[in-house]
Length: 298
Image (cartoon, rainbow, N blue to C red; front, side):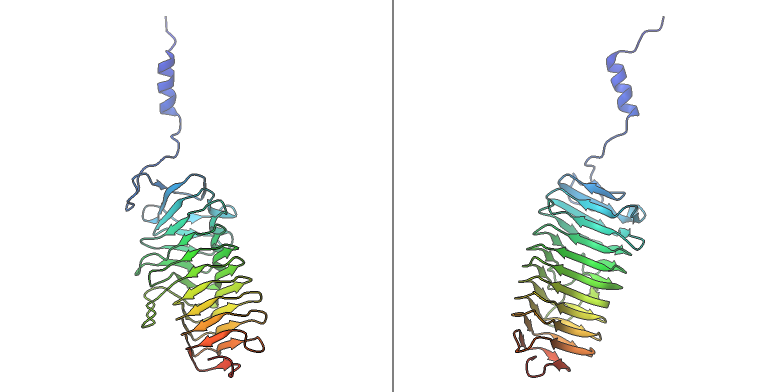
């Protein structure tokens, strides 16, 4: 006569047959032994270190509106040569407002391409680092490379080099909020960009209704450099190199009390332009060939 298996035996059998849930597993090249490898687009709902290891997997292809959605605080997302391809739509990484303490880094680079937005940041104080000097994070053929959406205190790189961006309509868009920091993105003494750089064909940095942002050491060759739009004030553009594009720096009508200092803007269709009457912005120490109005821009 066959006996029924014991409860313990049943539990043991179920544990073998049941799928193993995602858990901390340790990742190649990561100093965090508790990090978690991401192998597909997903939502992150727990704090911790997450790694997309492109050396051991193919590209992450969007099947919905977003690839990586970060909802938890204190998430460190590290990239090792991954590729996130939107196929012409969607968001590569979306950092929700609830994701305070977020950091994106890429020790051996990574590619965001063919996306509506490469990285969208809705959380204050996030850090979006550029990657290594010789292997920066690359944003290619996106409508917007990085969107800072009504945030404060966000830092985009501060190690003397920046991300590599090309094929964008807007490289970095700062929309609302303020007090964010971009750079320095190159050696501001010699205007040496390393491997990073922004090559258009659109606007490298577009600031709309945002105040108190600092952009230091921006390197742009091709496309326009910085557009400061209506309702934006007390922004500082310093020590940039802006060459061979549409306009180096333009301050649109309705934007006042901005400082444009110590930049090199050369060989653009218009190097420097202030659309406001009565010179409400500060222009000083800049090197350029063409400027409007000439009695205001220096």
